Amino acid sequence: MKAILFGATGMVGRGVLRESLLDPAVESVLAVGRSATGQQHEKLLGIVHLDLSDLSPIADRLSGYDACFFCLGVSSAGMSEEQYERVTFDITLAAAQALVELNPQMTFLYVSGAGTDSSERGRVMWARVKGKTENSLLRLPFKAAYMLRPAYIQPMHGVRSKTRLYRALYRVMAPLYPLWKVLFPNYVTTTEQVGRVMISLARGGADKQVLENQDINHIR
Image (cartoon, rainbow, N blue to C red):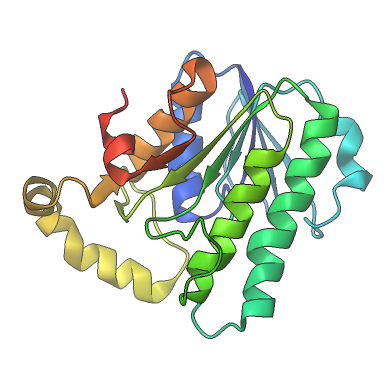
């Protein structure tokens, strides 16, 4: 399997990249982003592209792939709905539309979030935008598409958030994660599990297209 990865420098993307490089089923990974991953591996290729809303300048390098792991995302804190939609919806759909034309047999996997509003009409802004994004992705003619909705994600194996506040939070929470896993198994997962699940879905699929946190934890 050859995969394209968006968001490889973020916390979730770093976890997915780690698992992809470790998994013998993944032949190669092309990381596309605004900055380089800073990693070197025989299976890893990289493209630094500043305008992710327009992939046409690099389109000739994006064909021949079996899966896309889309882990790019931002917090909605302090953003207007228009700003958040531009990052969350516009960039995601621009990438997906470009990829489905180049790779119609591709499986597209999108990291969304617990609480996403599929109706697109709820009161919570980020949930509406995520719901709109999911719905639009599911309408594209990919071979398959899966929306992952993790809740709390614990970084593992040295994976770190780029946000200083979040890094501090994860340091505090790390010792408590085993307890959280026992008490709230449907609301916590790890970067390792998310990465493994995305690879598993790309290889063998699943019986549902929208996977909540508990679904993510049950896939092996």
